Image (cartoon, rainbow, N blue to C red; front, side, top):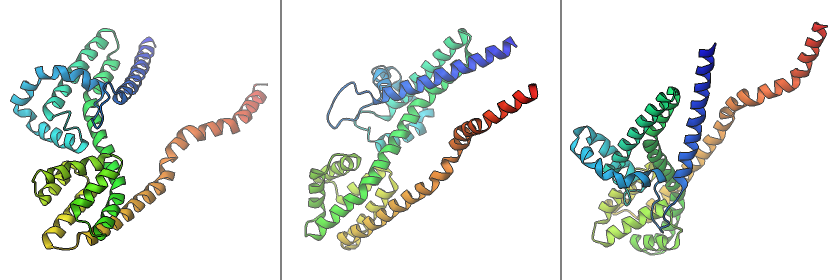
Length: 291
């Protein structure tokens, strides 16, 4: 009995600590220690560990085991737009240091008699850097997906009004509120200004961002440029397709909502309704039978 009680207590404490740690990490991710315009803000955990990453970077660069993780990390960092403040070596170094911190937390928790808590903390430290980076990529892709149809409409209007593609792109960048798509377009525009071919800069944009809709638009523009087709006509077609795709996606999410609500409905709402409706009847019946 005591063993079962201690196990249940340890499990409850471990789950509570894991939940608290998750909310703390989420809060730390939103904290901005340094205010800098147009500068990506890293989570506070990364800012605390990055000054120490120089001790681990030589190990990351010299170990052949990290070749594939380095390429994957580089690709995700570029897609998330953090390549100006973070590179793949430092990211992997932070990963290693957080794993070490998780091992220390596990040892301390086990020594304190809470091994379940230690396992949960180790798992949290282990998955947090990768989960944060994947979340950053997903948020950036969603922001680009939402902004792309409107940008294509503006480009179409400017090109059909007689402006060339680069002039239209410059005017749109200057007048739009800065967002993920604006940052990438501005970077591509500056690369073209510095002498890089337009096709090459656009292809690198698609490879860097890795957002399917943007890749499709860039491929169409490059192909139209190579074949001599009117870019304005291509932009109009792509804008219509993306708008229809966004509408279909919203309709799909709306249709999925009733199915997704079934689980919380069956788990939380229905038991409460049953207790309210049948509770008095059951209590009355028990009272009659006990008499």
